[in-house]
Image 1: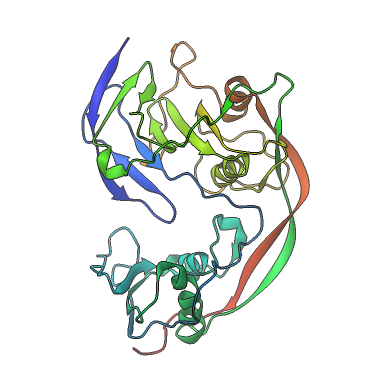
Image 2: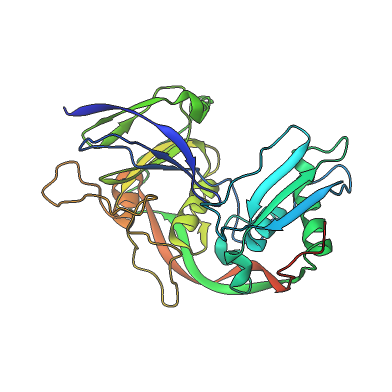
Length: 323
């Protein structure tokens, strides 16, 4: 049994993702980590309920001089401030609690121009109030005009395969240890090994992607698959409750229905490197569609005309109003 103990550190890698990059040279290095998607459906989610109709008190917005998210310096956060480096699109996704890129439509510059934002929270405001405050910021400072549309998109239904389920309901609540506590990992035969205190996590190894689910619903798994495929995935398993499972696969495109173009490069990991894969490798991961059926007893069935609520940004100012 071949194993390596690996040290890790945390870096930011764009909207909705975090990466665990390993600066060590081994043949089985942990390449990255994704955050499992929160439970959601295929429609644009309503903004979380806010206690008050707050607005940011003092807000500084400036266009990033470097022009992109990865190289611009982040403003330092404080307990009473909101700081971010975001595009209009990523701000809108936070404001309307959107999880998938296909849930928003905009002009190209709205996702490529980044803004350094430093705002003071009003007294009594909590994190639940931030989405509504961001809506106010977008309409008042960026002059954003938007509307909602329900569109029909090709996607998938997640169903139970004829072979039957190959995972079980959660027997107890698994604690979700902070990533900061996860300072080492062991990979055995291509499979990451995690402490019992680690909850749900998604990592990239040179062999492919490995998803560990703890206390996860089928709706949450469908949302994770939707983010991976860049297409709506609805839960049609009929399974209620929370489940524990492990899924290892090569993150390549499954057979997509006509008209679906996956968002991002599904054949590369978060560092932009293709997973190492060989049919002769006993630890090689299968492709996603095969892994779902062989490892979990689930199947993705192409579905036509899945209703998806989309936020359409009709207009916005590239240069926000003055501070």
